[in-house]
Amino acid sequence: MPAPRVTEGRVDDRRTAGRRSGDRRAGQSVPPATVARLPGYLRALEATASQGAVLTSSDELAARAGVTPAQLRKDLSFLGSYGRRGVGYDVGHLREQITVVLGLADVRRVIVVGVGNLGHALANYAGIAERGFALVGLVDADPAVVGSTVAGLVVEPADDLRGVVSRTGATIAVLTTPAAVAQQVCDELVAAGVVGILTFAPGALRVPPHVDVRAVDVASELQILAFHDRARSADGGAS
Image (cartoon, rainbow, N blue to C red; front, side):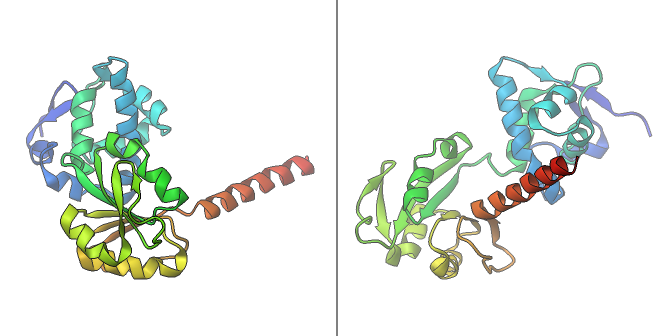
């Protein structure tokens, strides 16, 4: 089989013709572990672009993303992207590829359920809009919070959760409620049509197969750090 023709960080041959940035099949074939690293690559590319660079090498991009060059090249191969030897990757083209694979070519509408301290902070987090998401709704069960304005949005009552999802067209929800009500709220979100949930509530959520859940457990992460800190201390003491 003849070698593929490489131009500006992309490969032109029959094997990759169906895996360009606009082809959704590329995203469907990317392993979950690679998907988890793609946001880091996108951040690295954005930092590179902000410095005016048009091309970047696998070594430079890997260093920015905190992975090995070999891992980076393997991950990007699932997108059908291969750097040009001696030149590297086309920064703009690779950003486009990753953006499409991550589903960020179209703005994703997000609501936050639970507008306490954490929900309030997330609503004001500029990174949501910067990463291609639109915060379109805030929901809370506390009468003292409902009706207040946070980040330019009026907090709506939890009793109207399904209506909020329907009116805003939200497909992703950020859940910062107490653990005791998290599953109930999750069920209502799923019934309303939400297909992606980022939860900060402790405990596992049960969802149907078509719904994705990502959990952020700050306490558990701190406990893991404590374990490694203790292990280092023990090693130091033994020496």
